[in-house]
Picture 1 (cartoon, rainbow, N blue to C red):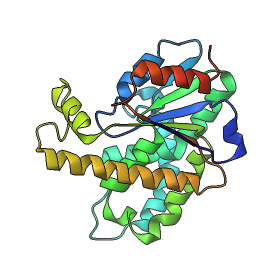
Picture 2: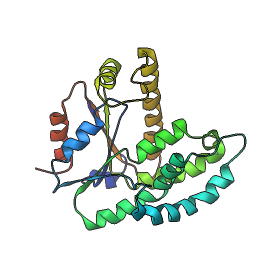
Picture 3: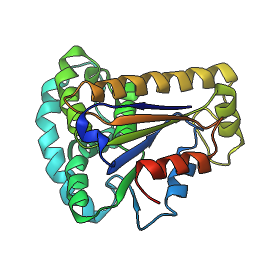
Picture 4: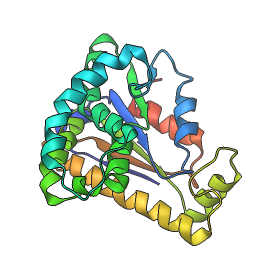
Length: 236
């Protein structure tokens, strides 16, 4: 399955900033690593690591910018942000500026795994209740449009639930639902799909947004998807 959605003339050009998304077991990491076999044309990029001293200024600067909005939105008895959530919101606030600087230095495709769409989905799904209220919508809309103006392409991987369940249960890596029942895993996957749909729709509601390519990894092998992406990236 392959579906392309065009949202804005700017996105018709060769994509420069690309994120891979999808539910657990869809094959995101496999595809991400496989595309690393083209180091001259594709740069594998990760979000700023809060544990690295070199990123201290980034988190201090954008965290301070974030604080007034969070303080204004916070309402008891909602829980406060965890440190991980605060780091994620800070990344969502400032990472786009970092990526735009990277774009000016290279002609490579910048490929993101666990990028802004993933982080937005996690925050909207699992974040504190006060950030799910109507009063927070303007806060989120600013982030949506910032990332809609940064991302050129979203590669959305998925497969039928039984396939994803088997992959989750058979891989050595632990996962939150790895040892859960089939109905629990199915509900978990459905929740992520629904949240991704909301985030992608929100990005598309901005003046320009990323194109979306959807692939069924139960039907298409990584090599087939890579071949199609090479055409998208204009890499021979």
